Picture (tube, rainbow, N blue to C red):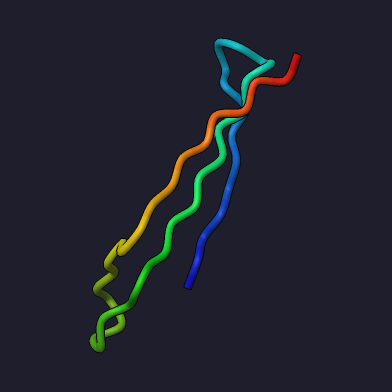
Length: 45
């Protein structure tokens, strides 16, 4: 499963941070493994 979200930098409103995490769940349905992560910074000018 892949989770994506973005946040606007509170110190610089012209900067947006984009995150993406690929995760796997354990068989006990409580364990969560992050198998891959990505961060991209986007400056809007």
